[in-house]
Length: 204
Image 1 (cartoon, rainbow, N blue to C red):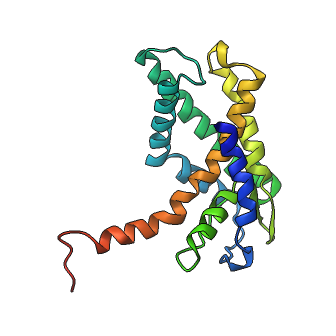
Image 2: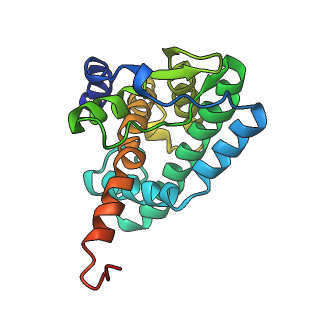
């Protein structure tokens, strides 16, 4: 299943929208990349993602293999949050600065077709903007995910410290970053829909 998630991120390249339709942003400085890392990491979504990943791992008894009882859940949660933080640090700050890549997500918006937006969001896992303009292979995300997967061996239980486990963790991180882009792409639309359909919303 996790391998299929990785394939879906790469297959989405076929659906990706022409980047010329995306509003360009000024090239970020190193300080702005640090600020992007901190905003993305120290946000409620990071804890929510950690809880979701830990719950899925606990219910399916998948890696990291801390145990079968619910006493293992805090360890799974802590490992999940640590994975997210380390991936964000190396992707959005260290490698993005060194490789001059701009990892900030820029949404297409509701003026585009839904499936085009889905494909574009997923494709950002492997495509990124350069500081100088244009697009390139998202080495910051792919490399940052690899470093995070390698570092996980420092706190994963011995049963999960295997080459195959690290490979699965790496591929899951890449696919997960593409899926996570669906939130900033579609959340403004959903929020606007909720505002329009509040039962006690008053029109002025």
